Amino acid sequence: MKLATYKDGSRDGQLVVVSRDLSSAHYASGIATRLQQVLDDWNFLSPQLQELSQTLNHGKARHAFPFDPRMCMAPLPRAFQWADGSAFINHVELVRKARGAEVPPSFYTDPLMYQGGSDDFLGPCDDVVCPSEDFGIDFEAEVAVVTGDVAMGASADEALESVRLLMLANDVSLRNLIPPELAKGFGFLQSKPATAFSPVAATPDELGEHWRGGRVHLNLESVWNGTRVGLCDAGPEMTFHFGELIAHLGKTRNVRAGSIVGSGTVSNKDWSRGYSCIAEKRAIETIEGGAPKTEFMKFGDTIRIDMKGADGLSLFGSIDQRVSAYGRPEAGRQ
Image (tube, rainbow, N blue to C red; front, side):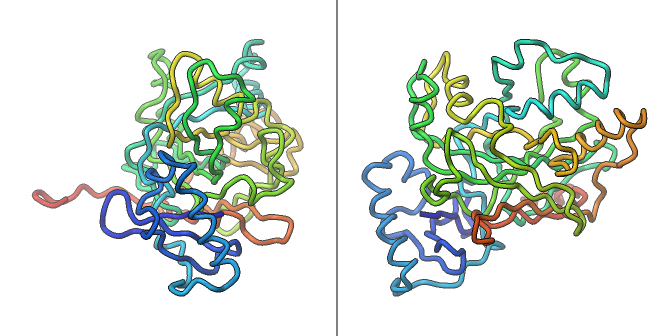
């Protein structure tokens, strides 16, 4: 089944069930009003939503309406945690090679991961708002999963069983703020603004054979200012699968239902497949020519991130955003 959250003026929105072809939707309010409720009581509520999903897919849902991605918040508008990995080691290798640094051996056996902000996600069509172009605005096209409860110390296989939903992410990075933050030795903070997610989150069965081994074996498309810049395979070159990433997160603590874990920038060794973030393109330019040529995003730029199934239809709906300048709210206004 496929689930989304519609804007209703509240922070958490209204849960809707979406048809497989993303053409229609139905409010799930008779079962649950918010996705977090479902994740907290998955075994009881998800079968009811699945039944509604089947009715919707067969065109028999009485109160169905046309699905509009512009009405969507992130499937989980705010979550208990957002932990983003860097599971595609090729991305790490390129970025480090461009600055003349080697990849430590441990990076191939122990996942990289950071804890991001999870209190204020962006919807798929919300603007990427930034105070300054000088911050080095970059998109990062990723795959993400939403978990159920995972006990501390769970194995990778056990952790993989906790995957409830899959979706796409734009893990926006402000590249020019990253070096001074990392130099402090405490990780990302200001350099990682709000993350955006696809309109729809789908259960693993919706991907069929393309979900196997804890990886999504499909192409992730990135279209920047109307030009396709990346069509990267999200499967074979993912060094650490989602079970390994979740187990890494839960090594010393419980992981609770509603946690979101990202894959990191999808990256392939075949450069002809393009790139899923501008930083990688700049790294390739530096390796080939000694200096980067491609500039980071400007106000007014657009980014669309999508993934299509074997039938050519979008699986999750597209993240379709514009970069805009931040204007401080007027005094006394929210």
